[in-house]
Image 1 (tube, rainbow, N blue to C red):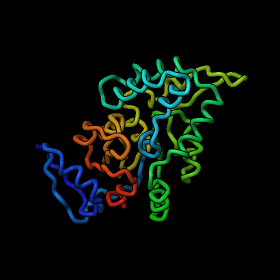
Image 2: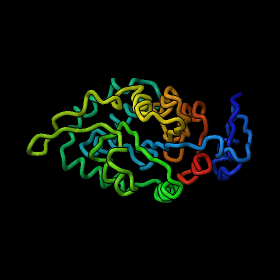
Image 3: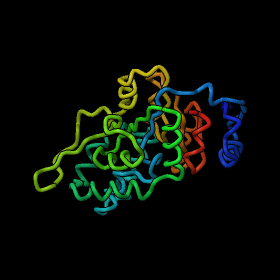
Image 4: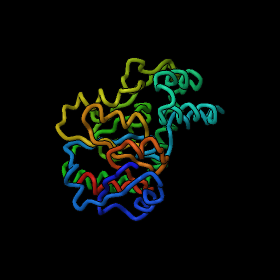
Amino acid sequence: MKKIFISDKLANDGVNYLKAQDDIEIHFEVGLSKAVNAEIVCFDCDSTLSKIEGIDELARRVGLGEELAKLTDAAMNGDVALEDIYGKRLDLIKPNRDAIDWLADLYIAELVDGVVEVFAELQKYNKTVHIISGGLLPAILPLAKLLGVSESNVHAVDVYFAENGNYLNYETESPLAKNGGKAKVIKSLQATSLVMIGDGKTDLEAKQAGAKVIGFGGVVNRKLVCENADFFVADKNLTAVLPYIL
């Protein structure tokens, strides 16, 4: 049986979810947030800040949604390597500049509940915030701007277009298009205390760089993340992570 130490401030729906799991033994700890207080707080984007998976939405837009969503889910569950599917998905979709602009708007329209409040609190406490995502950089930047995150603190995969706006290629050398990429980005930040918040296997890889990982199951609840993250939040509202990081 897996022991999970959770904050005494965790919201009731998160506690109830954990109690319902047969293989989890819950231990409450007063003031747990102080134990994981972080200099830098990093967030995944897809299914963490926004309720969507961006590349899957682009696939739906061209009639390939069901097929490619299965590939994305397999990568986030650790069943296939991210690098084995990343280019394949984009080669099939071929997202042009208009499609990326459409996706940028959708990311904002589908914000997870509590995101704006969380970022406001982090700013109040002078936390340094980064977004680290395997998503497409130009689609994520408008969301980052809305949340007050500087462009230099957004780490994602760039996309290249022809003069007419048609898709050419993606940033094939980006570490974030491969497994282990988030650990590489986190190492480059050279932080002594860092927390990564996300929903998938690629977020768990941040532990390789010494980061604490808070699994977020409010959009997609993955057993792999629940069992292997340092802490896990099942609430649909992102404010449930605040007791761990303030």
